[in-house]
Image (tube, rainbow, N blue to C red; front, side, top):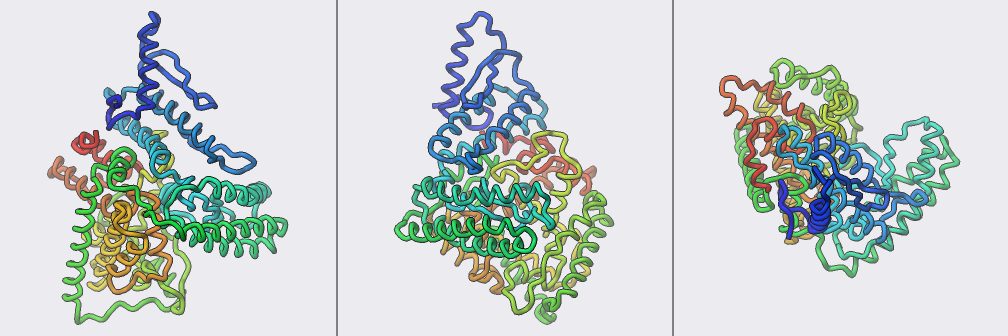
Length: 569
């Protein structure tokens, strides 16, 4: 039972709120116009009457929603106790009722897109309450430190309500930073104690990776204690208390996981609901399986053909020294920027080059474990620069914010994944086809196919885990076995971190290839529409201008084609 909406159906609770409100409106002789609702601090619905919903009403609702979705804290600890979760669910239903009372059908397409972005975020919280229940089934919800920043809007994966972003604390710390860091560190023991009470669901693989993450966090906190010992010794006791709590929590997770048998995927039906209603993705689990299998087979085929063609050429040698690595990195960035400008691929603001140069990264000596992307980068620094367009996206969001208030901030629930990861993945091959690696030599172009194969291999694991056909171990083994040249070591962090992310966040593991398919389809559609008037630079500039939103929404906005939108209704 439900009330028809622009996409899918309104949840029963929302339908009940709307029906009761509309009945009251019909009984009132002075009730002219559309019901308008607000949400009080207690999450209850407060109704009034006024003009039909406008785009300005949507923006106001979005601001209310973003304030509402941030968890409340008690003594510095995010509150996800059963009572708080129930209150959040009631407040969400009220907000969804306000949104459903707005009819965007007569608005310009760009404003309709914004409406569906807000709807998708609310659906994301609904899915959390109905299916994922991260506070009750995912120990990684209680992650407490993150040492490095991310190359995508927000961060990959589900929200971590108390994850201290250590990379933002640069020496010397300001008094305000010292106070904030101390408060967050002191909240960690209470947060993890709440986690022990909240985690009641059976999800063995999530518990296994949760214990693994806690070992990494303990090491990170030990490093932090050493650093603060000379800079801010008063904080060391806070760090040590947090470290003990993390270690005890990890031991508890390991013990609890032993008796668990249930796999941790959401199932195909819920995966499809999530794709359609949260990620605004027209491709179902089965559609994505076909696309991933096709891309994996294509990568293997082209890699073998290229290797056969190049069989008499010397293999690529890895960089041996840090000096050589840094020199090659700077050269690759400048070559990439020059290519984009000279070939008029897309407009290149002055801040793009510094954005890439700032992401040089550390050097891993030959004696260290060189994981997958190091295997690529240390053979040639150029192929991965296409994926480095991530940093262009982030710089653009900061330097040139979108006109829409809804698109200026990173969308929640990784709703941007097909745009962020899909474009970065697609552009590796697009740049190569457009001539970026022409002077690099045939062997370098083989690396493009190696990377595509690895994306396909890991995406297969993501799909099969969520259909509950594979365990996490099986997904890891498949990715390792199907990544060319043995370049994805099973004992490295990459394969485990990737499969953990994909298990926690449905759709992320496939977003690289599904987004790539979307980008290619969009480019083909636009070229067909414009014919001889199609200009590559104009196309990519328009795509960038649309913001970090699902590619299905960009396609609707850029082309007017609504077939994908209709398929999601």
